[in-house]
Image (cartoon, rainbow, N blue to C red; front, side, top):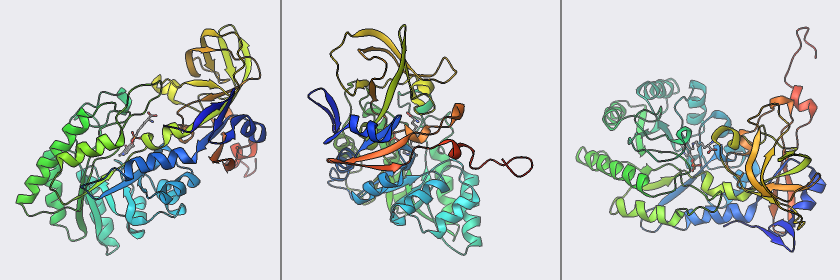
Length: 414
Ligand code: LLP
């Protein structure tokens, strides 16, 4: 459930008219609802019953510091995948003991930063990565906390690019290798094995694949019991799908109940790393129709602002900011000004919009702004957060000087 709704014919985020936001800050602009973010974080946090739970919001989904602060204040920790995300989480005031470092390619510098900041765990994805972490920790005369990411070889039934739990994917290690790495950890005094982890994909619409992965995790835990190896946590990653066009979704409480049932009687903590299911429905992107031509609405936002439709053929609903009760035209394509035929925000939508109208592209709070770029030398959009009847700029719109700020001419001048 989100807090975007019509009052009369005007679209509001909580108690703020989106027309007012566009008037003040222009378009394209991402607008997030604080109440929606908090509600979704609580939907996870309040669902743990028999297990001690920790929700580590996946920073890659939406990384603005003000958003991270909001989620931290709701009780979330963070799942990070880069030194940059660590920097952001720390700036947001995150408790390092609630930070998990995931990802297949952590650099030495990133390992040093994680150890220096005393994070909860490095989720390790290969033997070489584990070796390198051991060496980095030894050089620093420290002990690095480790969770092994196993690959359960399950197909999460989602878009090819967002499946991560099959044997053929680059993520995690097989159960057999996981056992070897666990052994390596116990033989290395600079490594401390604290957990077991997996993440099978994103935008998953059924419990089945989560269940299969959890059962394999349980089998491994039972084997470790026999070896007297005890872990602090089991981290089942993120992946819960959201509704883009009214699809039925699994609720966080159902997912957590499913895990609690499988892990019943175990003493490990349960960590989850949701991204999309917390932030996707908390954001819209405001864009203005610049022109109308045949069945094209040409917007001032483009694939550089929202890449998902072009990259994954993802569908996002598009709502008018003001309903005009004009004549509906069907099979309209909302496209941007970028010089690529693949530059579309939505295809085959029904729309009454005309030149100058404002539109809200929905469900862009996850993998929206964070995947934006400066392609075609387009400055990145502004970001706004709405809190009840107030709205705040949380990232300025870039301007032309931001586009060239880091460039240097051959003669040292631009
Ligand atoms: N944990 C790990 C290790 C991950 O790789 C991811 C997402 C998450 C947690 C959070 O997953 P979520 O709960 O958001 O599904 N750009 C794609 C999605 C890529 C997801 C990458 N990993 C999209 O726009 O659909």
